[in-house]
Length: 411
Image 1: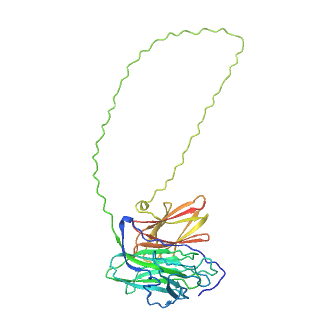
Image 2: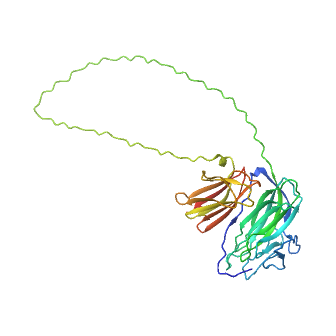
Image 3: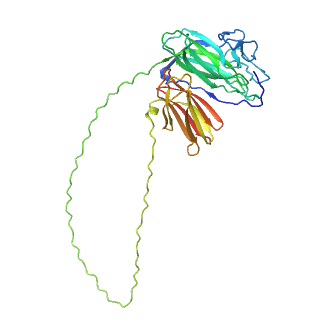
């Protein structure tokens, strides 16, 4: 329901991060599922499953709890929605997207069964989303928070992925959300379910397009060939030679006695010069405490998944398990210094505090997966709070890859 309140919509940044192994180890195959909803003249796939809270509606400005398949939208709800002249699919003519006006309560807006998947395999799910509400709308914002759940036909959950807040914008800003999951043995189909986990209201409306599912094959790099050690030729040892110096003849010198001086009655003044010893001030070098880089940071890749610039502040960092709690544990380093060791992730946060000021202007937080839990990979949600700024960072790490967040003090 659209409520008019005199508060601007708050812009929050939603960031997604997924498992990325080294480039030479991943092979992405052609999609086995691709849903782009067709076009205005040739619609395709207009049945998002049996839904209890959502119904299809005509036009391009659906009411609360309704969705439409449209190629554009403009002037909806007295201009509270942005104007969209096209969908996301590149190169299509009058292509459709799915426009969703959120229901009053959280619920499922899309469900689809995919047949022909392979057991014991890795797949990537990918979806493009955009918040259609303007940042300048005079309302109390309740932005969408979408979750993708991968289920077996009997309802067993394989993976749950959350987008975090879909921030409102003043122009169409499509974002791709994607992640990998593994299929268990003995199945040939899966169910993709999408839920909006936010209550309805102003700000909780969105568009969706280009859903794809493709298999990901992991190809291990070939083992390096052993290098034969070169034989080492010992160097000859130099034997010292003792040289006896020849005696040097010494000439005898004739000493001429000094002439005797006549005694004088005049007083002779003698200036005594006292020389003071010069004391050198020793230079003492302070020992440099060099921080040793932990081996786990040297042996794995450390891609930067988020960079933050902030004013001087004490930053509060909270870590949660992203999705189903499956026993993930992590270790966290700050500038190569251990902050947290083998912390278990769950619905209760692991809390860290760091200071960003002139004395500590640069921080490199590295998240290390100690294990992969019962549902690989190791996934977590990091919420960073600095003053009135809040960042949601979705992290995926593995035995080959850590995840680095760089925080710098604004100049």
